[in-house]
Length: 168
Image 1 (spheres, rainbow, N blue to C red):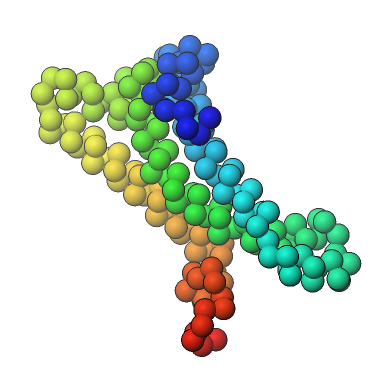
Image 2 (image 1 turned 90 degrees about the horizontal axis):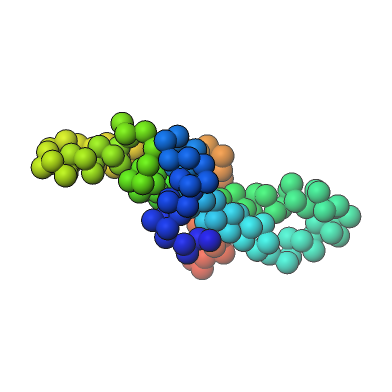
C-alpha cells in the first residue's frame, strides 16, 4: 500500500467516500502517512537490544513492564523520525488529492485553476502557502520530539552512546 502512488488512490477514494466532501482527501492523506509511521514505530518496538531485555527479565519484569519501560522509550526516536518524514509528505498528499475532487477553495485547486488561467502570481502564492504549511508541520514534529524526549538533547541526539573518544 505504501508503494501505491497517491494519484492512484485519489480517484478510488473519491468513488468510495464522495467527490464533493473532504473525507476522501483525508483518507488519501491517512493512507499515505500511516505506513511510514507504523513501520518505523514497529521497528522501534522490536529493535530493542537483547541485553536490555535480558536485564528486565532478570528483574522478573512482565511483558507490560518491558513494553512500558524499554520498548516504548526505544520506539520514540523511530516514531519522531517518522513524523518528521511524513509532515511534508502529508501536505503533498493533500494537495494531490485535491486535484481530483473536494471543495474548490483548497490549495490544490487554487494552484491548478490559477495556473490554467496564467495567473501565476496566485499559483506561486498558493505554492508558498503549501510550503509554509509543510515547514510548520515539520517544525511541530521537531518540537514534539524535543519536548517528549529531552534526553536526546543532552546526548546530542546520538543513537550510538558508546562512540569511541566521546567523554561522558
